[in-house]
Image 1 (tube, rainbow, N blue to C red):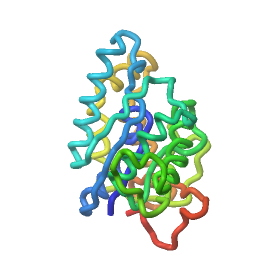
Image 2 (image 1 turned 90 degrees about the vertical axis):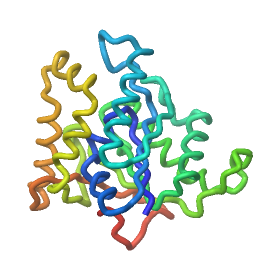
Image 3 (image 1 turned 135 degrees about the vertical axis):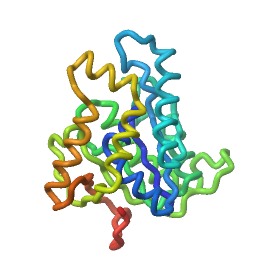
Image 4 (image 1 turned 90 degrees about the horizontal axis):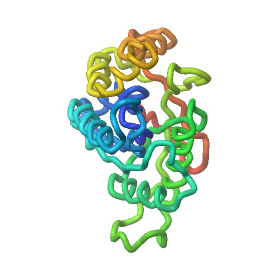
Length: 236
């Protein structure tokens, strides 16, 4: 299968579904990781232009650990807007190129606007990607189906009630390594907020594991909208 994961900032996918992406890749599925925002405002000391380059390299390093293709749409932080035609067009192009069997992204409700805007943009773009007369000048065939969407966990699992779980017990160390690739954020969160973020990520995964009887897990819900529903189990 082709699996497209669309996160807001570099490191969001690693936090929310890194173990699942690692598992998918190990099973032979093609994984593409898209970061909508460039993370330019994710530090108090490092200036935005320098931080963009640092975070882009960190994202590529994390993706390389599982053999994923990594794509940045380079939208500035806090300027992600789902009603911008430019963003929808970029996402449509990616969806048509990847032709995903399903998409993983942020839930419609999360802790900040950039995340919720990405969720809505993915929902809109995944439908638009199937419309024959939308952006045909790009020379890429329309996707042949409206891809099912799975929403990954919120940060710390707040307000999120999974309906599906993925056992990542064998991939928790890979997930931690993927997150550890984002050193600009690991150091920033510790210095700015006093958060040991690798412990944070491991703890949430353990908590989800306790809920489903595994050592470590990640939780998801499926988008309940026609024609995205399926009888098949798509998550690994």
